[in-house]
Image (cartoon, rainbow, N blue to C red; front, side):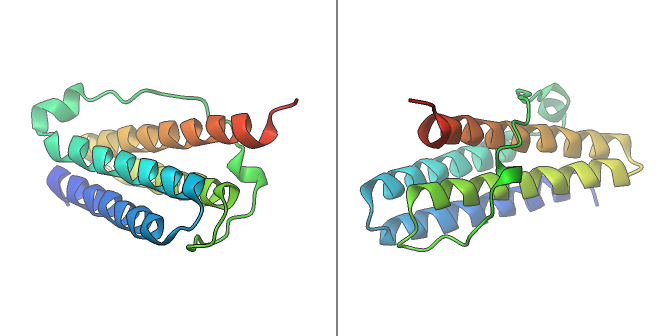
Length: 147
């Protein structure tokens, strides 16, 4: 396994997430859900483009924004998203998917003896945590805000 293999696997994951969100958005009846799914799909496309643009020099310079894990998703049960899912279910699903990606990359960063690969996995974990944190902040704003 080399850096390009890691990036290609991460790119594949971003493509799969994009496809899921985009295809579900196409079937969603609720306009707010459709809008969120399209925004999530667009973010996944941006993540893929970022990963595709990284070469050896840019990997060293790549420093993802670090955000605190709000642990909102830890308190919520995930359900599979469908065309009739509501906004809350879609957000919970997306938070859990970002958390799963973060945990996978974090485990890989600890398991690899190669410092360059381990460092790349750590950076990917930080990036996924930032995505999750953004979703959690939005979730708090929409569903947990006190009136």
